[in-house]
Structures are given as C-alpha cells and as structure tokens.
Image (cartoon, rainbow, N blue to C red; front, side, top):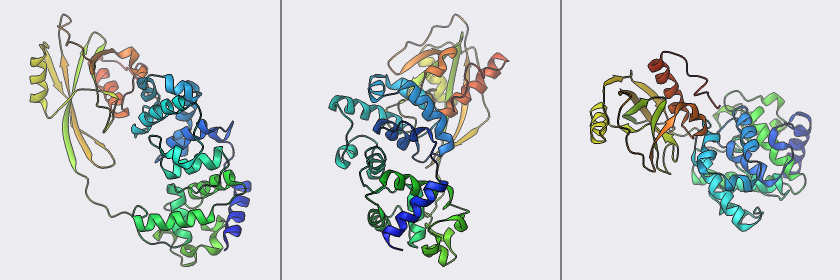
Length: 360
C-alpha cells in the first residue's frame, strides 16, 4: 500500500468511525491541544476527560496557568499521576507567557519543559495544521504491526525505524484528521491484547495480520522484578489539623504535600522528640503496598495522638499544619489522600469522605 492509499484508508475510516466529540476537539487552539496531549501521556482517554474539563475550567488560558501558584496546578492534577507533567506545564506556561505567543515550530516547542518530538508534532499538526509526524504509544503499536517490526520500541534502532515510517506516511492534506485518526486506530482497533483486525482499514496490507501474529508486535520489554522500598509515614493530628511536609520539587510526588516519612517507627518517634512534640499515644497501621512504575513501596502509618495543649511543631517552608477541611486545595498524591481519609476516619470514629473527597 502506498503512503497515499494508507492515508486515504485511514482518514476515510476516521470520518466514519473516529472520535469527533472529545473535549479537546472542541474550540481547538494550541493551548487546549497541548494540555490534552500532556494529560494523555500514559493515561487513558476516559480517565483524562474529567481532569481535562476541570483543568480547563480552572486554567482556561496559558496566561491563567502561568499566573497560578504551582500548588494550585498540582491540586488540580491530584490523582492523575506522573506529577512532573503538571510541574512542566506550569514552567512551560510561564516561558510562553514571557515569549508573548505560543511557539509554532518543532524546535521552539521541544525547548519547553515536558514536550518531546511526538507531543510537539501533535500540537503542530492538530492546532497549526502543519505536517509533522507523531509517535505516541498507539502509533507505535499500529506501525510495528503494519510493518512487522521486531524489537522493543524503546530501543534506538526500533525507534528510528518507526520515526522513518511515521514521517513517510504523514500527509500534507488533512493533517489534523490524519493525526487524530492514527491515534484513534491504535486506541480503538489496534489494541494491545485483542486487536479488532476485521474492522481495521489497513488489515489488507498489515504484515502482522497477514502472518496471523498481530499480538506478537510490538515486542514487549524484558521484564525484571521490581525492587521493594519500605518506610513509615507519620500522621500527627491535632484539633482538625494535620502536619504535612512538602516534598522536593523533583522525584516521586515532586512538589506535592505528603506526610513526613521515615525509615521506621523508631526514627519517626525520635523526630517527634527532637521537635518537642508531646506524644500521648501512638498507633501503627497494618502494612500496605503501593506500586510505582519502577518499584514497590511497602509502608505503615504511625498515628501520633497528642494532648490538645500540645506545643505545635514550628512551621517552615516545607513543614506546615493544614486544616482537614482545606485538603482539597492542596496538591496531595492520591494514595496519601486516601490514606488520610482512612486514618482520620479511624481516629474520629466517623466518615470523613466528604472532607477528603476524591478528585479523580
């Protein structure tokens, strides 16, 4: 199949079967496309939609995003994961605001935090109607099957092949529709485990389909056992206030508020003594596990009960008391928010779900 026939088959399918009513497909502009592309990285459309709608209601323009405190941005992102995306959005918005206009070239977009070649290509093709290839996860899956390319797509050799094919197939006409079409095909038809090859407009020329081995592509990354890390979270609760610590700007949960963490219960209690915190009673929760992409976190929660007359730990830039009724104004990791809700419910003997409601 020639590139022209490939493009025609794909766009014709999109006209009939593609998605046309997603929130970011309405009132298209570079800012709206950019936000959607960042949110859709490693996150499903159904999960993104409510977050996108809330985010755009809170930050309707790049100027609004630029002017907002980063804590507000992280609070709006809570539960969506991969929080570096939110921090990069905020930093990039400030750069765009300083520049005075939204970048419209590949190099200028890729110079912004959090924007790689594929994301830049999507913004240029969808918002600016410029012919640039993309290579997100869905497109990689379509192309590795269509051309029967062996090897994990993260390898440089395979990645280079895929970019060559994506570039050759990218049209000059209807570029926005083509870009959306190839992403839709990967999401709806050329799925990871049960591809609907009988409904695919490209199956007649798809090498993986002709070999009857579509699920053999793309080649999976070699797996290895995830390491396990252990720690103890400290929950100090006094008169409707919880002591929270702001995490460093980089790394896991970067820039979010969380519970102070320690290697074990002994270290946590030593820290309390060092800060003159009166400890009347303690309670240690059963062990729990949270799995990140690259390690397991086994943790317990040490609840410290103190007299009402306790001397509050002195606040610093990173250590601060927060009223439980204002938790939804903070950027909290979803597991920490759930943990707080559960533990405070046990402490108070009633349901605090409305106080620490889920945001996604």
